[in-house]
Image (cartoon, rainbow, N blue to C red):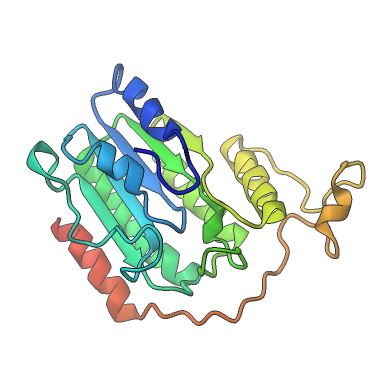
Length: 227
């Protein structure tokens, strides 16, 4: 069930362990790529629901993740895909993320959540074509955390290494309710990597246009509610 740059699907293995003590596990994926491996592993299961927010045009790797992939047999309607077009920004992303996650948690009633925080959905990634800021990425983590359901939070993709480090350091602080300084400390062995701004939340400029209309976003929300 591994795919892409993964040779072992550690998330699937983790969920299998969680199922030993949890009746229902919700998997949420905010990596820019579709969570195909986890979806495939539990496509026939009604104990694991997969919810993936990802870039999709039918060609972008891995080419899966349409709204029509909903699971089969006992797992029918337990795979939920939110295919977004390139250039999605903070406002558009949170517009679909919050209501869909909230409705999914309310209807599925998971006893545990696995949240995959792939940093390739950040603006400026070498492979991803989203326009998300560190603040937006972190807001997704905070929102899921606000439901007070036991969580396993894991990393994922990310192909601009210094931004991956920034993102996961910031999100770790949010999970631990620790306020961290936005300035990278000069004592860091990797201080020079973060020039010229040396901060946790640099302004990321991008020329990618947001192709996600409000009509598309509302259609995705409506489809998720109906599923």
